Figure 1 (cartoon, rainbow, N blue to C red):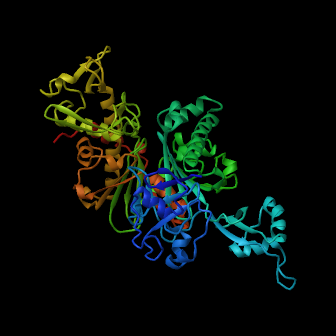
Figure 2 (figure 1 turned 180 degrees about the horizontal axis):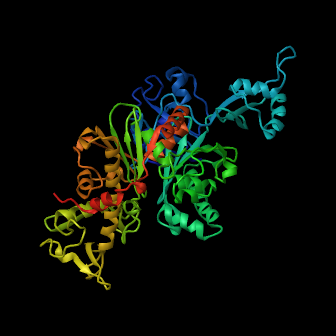
Figure 3 (figure 1 turned 60 degrees about the vertical axis):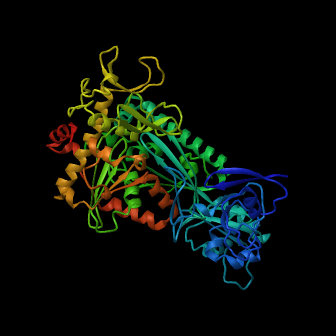
Length: 607
């Protein structure tokens, strides 16, 4: 009977024929890059792979060739590991240190000294002897796990029979609580999810808590976008509708639960084996997800109901993982600088050293943090969703069919499309390229106005629609005149508003700290499309400050990275709490000269 085996990171699923007895034999037949220089007899130890969902235990040869740490992390020798249906195998070609790239967005991490939010330990529950100094069975379990809290009534009800039958059982526990008991040794099967609730998009990472491997990831549009493109519009919706909070919260949970179900199913993983979740988002998104009314965030002095949240049972939140699983919601810095930014600061490491770092998270809210180990100061700039494809006439999120790169060359417009298919729209990185190229070629002037006579080669692409609004057709989908993708004057204005908000935030933080741009040691760019951003084009339109290119570093979605770190490390969670406590926040809207600075930054500074 054939067995289904999944190989990562290529996510290739194969059916192993009956004649292949081991992973090594199957890999050799498929021509996979696996070193079996000893001929597959277990002498060289070079065919190390990480195996998930294995029912077999390492044999004597594997226990001899692999260290205890490697065995604990799920390493096996492919030449010795028997084939079983449902195995998931990470090949060593993906291993490149502590962080490995699976694709443009999902990073695969191996954290040293990991201490995940939830852990498992298998033990045989044996009744104590008469002369043992033990007063209850529950105390035996708590002492073995190093816990001090009491055990829930449901677990106490099943514990007696496990001891009487001397059963092998697996304890599922946090740093403080025993949360579940599973029959048999299930310690190899422990998973969590890192969740980023963005204003525009939702991201879920599926993580193996035993190894730290990011198994898979899922990206979807935030369904709340139907109720408003930004935080303030959603707060307004809540004010106008008596059941608005319930509606917005349900929209998020339904979508997240579908994502979790899909990502688990794609990896042949029961949702009940997911015991931990860490959620990050801006302050408003976190409040809504928890069912907390965020109205106080939308009114001066813009204070949230809480910055810190208790650890939750998954069942109480309604998250579709194991009902006894634990859910941690990242603490927030302020009403408009949320848990996503605290997580990003932690993930970037900027709070640990003496280098002065400017962190710019380019999203709907455009948060900015300046500092180092000595100080941290932050602000939130209402950039809007333009750089995530929102409120742009042909905008879309970065998925298949989105134009991600644009270049003008000798009167032609060259486009790169995600998935190498026909373009459906343009995402943030492509939009920035397009505006920068239009500025260079005189198609947009400093005020942001489309200029019909600005370019001899490309000026013919500027047109007026039925309402008299100017537009620039940058992509023809057919020879028929008037078809294709175009950017309008209104779209350019949305980009101006977004870039002015970010530039103003940067200028204010520098002024508040008496730091010049020359004093900045590095600029870290966070955001879903950061890795695809052209630095020169971003500086041309004014999103990024004009600094030497070598000072600019991209870390992608820093919020989900921070959520991952908190999922895998108790130390990381403590670091986030410290960051929240020590970060000073500047509220831009209360500054007397804010309007003047903002209006100045609306202008494109064409070199």
